[in-house]
Length: 167
Image (cartoon, rainbow, N blue to C red):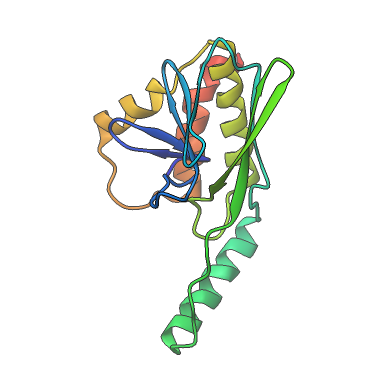
């Protein structure tokens, strides 16, 4: 997971990839977006005028650490029942049409505000055609990440991808 993106060798999703047939998700590729789920849809990047992710769970580092500590203590005391991931909304705009797709957050507790801001900056570049989701799958193929990256590591990667685009 890097920011709002779940990245594999061949796929990039906004939030978690859908695991069950009734779940929805949004996959991105160099050619466009694909809504996965009961009502599948496909959009070419040339059709998309805006792409946002709303209802993103954002917390400060202090609150994220406190949540992790509380979860760890509760689990150690066998009093913890894992909760469901937060639901976010991917909003795809095409001219006058707006489609909302519910997706699940990939963050264990929450994202940092910087991760969200940098992720939205990348999404804007995908929509404008000045960048492509291929940079995420190329990164995965080159690094083959193991384990979950810390928020500062994720922010540094997003910053690296967005820096040339923001100058």
